[in-house]
Image 1 (cartoon, helix red, strand yellow):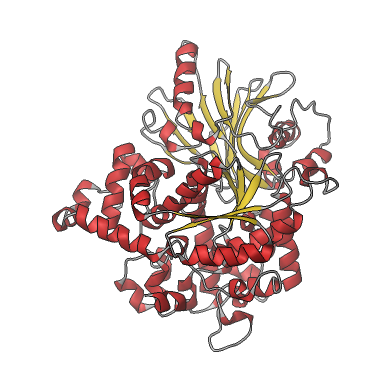
Image 2: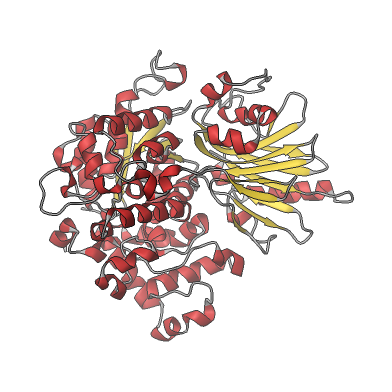
Length: 565
């Protein structure tokens, strides 16, 4: 994973050398994402800059990726997990210039339409492709938005794209997120959605069951293909169900090299796992239990509240949001990424997405029926690019560590999401798999983990690192923001005015780095309870009176939280 920066729509008379220098300077703001190498391409119609984090083909995969004849120039941030299969399926020969997994996009473009070949790619990506022959620009982003991408227009009307907003905000008054699952064609000026799945409609999944074996096999395949790497990697292990399952499956494949079909010994055969928390945090204790059972080389790190507080401005600058839940969870993740980087690890697998696929957030206990449960899953998946995917990607990539998320693997989603949501719902008073959230997933992996980990109740990451973290942040914000300031919040912040002093405090830090209205509008608003969408607040009358996104906001559900308060 890397960063991309592009300027398109150049006209005769544009000062190419000045724009080249500016492009390099603005791209440098993203260099934390790709500290290994920088590449630049300049044409009379386009400028592309790439900051590389070398994961696959470290010696020869530098970008932008050019076709042999120089017609195509491609800058990609991401990983194409099925690139070997896609190369085999090519209908016409293509002279590959590197061993990069991403170069297959050039080959696909030459023989297929974007709307078609994008549907064939299983990966996480954001790319900009310049076709010099046709004077055409193609921009696209992965289906869920695991990889960030922003775009906007400068004062001369030129289109600009970048992996992070910080490279655009000073030049583009209309900076915005490029939507996940879409592609843009400069030839038509159209932005088109390519990712459409039948399972988005509840009618298509109603009555459908997926066996535990099918679910397990699909997830194992997802983890296996995402172990594609030529550099040291590890797993994030909080001790919760999701990260522990990722680690358990990865541990089964870690001793063999994925790139040659598991025929040779892996270059780094010992699987390393990483956790962080305040002293005495639930996650640190549970992660140690999981690591001992799985046999990983485990690294549990403690941080202090003061260290987290000191990091907040830098965290907000990197993650480019003022969302309360995201900032709470991003800060310890940001601190952990720095430790991981120091150990020479460049890629980690993580458990994001499971709660959105299986209804793991504790407020899902209140869902009135399967249809509403399913519709909330879709809303949560659609919002991942603004929340958990944004957090995981930007807080880890702040230190040049690439996160991968097997639960959001395209093929796995097609298995897990075609299941009737009735099988994912908690059935109170029963002793079977559905006695707890994500019971269908826990049942599918029976025997993979110790029982206390397999059936550990949901902890949001910001809760699991230690309840003192959230409580301390609230207390700090209370001391920093006056009642008068909060009462006038809508005057200072007309876009999504903060509703709490903690939200006001974060918004003030965000404004230091991103003061424009367009930047503020890249962050979604709306009330949330325990990470719900605004629509789900109607599920329980008590939700309307709450404003805390922590899992403890539904304390009647959260047994462990209640016990520890």
